[in-house]
Length: 167
Image (tube, rainbow, N blue to C red; front, side, top):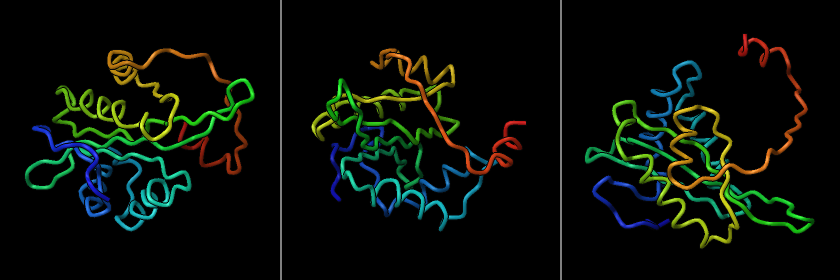
């Protein structure tokens, strides 16, 4: 898989499988309450991005000169039904930014790369389900628009673990 974006001064480029040790390390720094071993993270990331049957994924990373992952953002393909017509879209997910870089322009640069590249992969729009206030403000500032409220239904299988995490 070749870089889809030119290397920039921020080191933003397509994240590759070879970058997984650095990406996994960033994940565990950001999510200390939900740690994953490298093998667990690799299996999950590969399932989400490499084995995705739609093949319209895009995974971006910002990497330091030492190879450390400073930020990560991806889009995966989903299909919406818009007035009965299947419409391809991108779902912006897996946002991770190193704590020391959160007040920089790294996130807007990542999302700009996503917006620039993803329409060429056949998507009609990009959506995000972010609810964290600072990220929501950032998303609105870089071009996301508030859309219609979408009803979401789910069927929980194991309610106990969900309740324990919520309490």
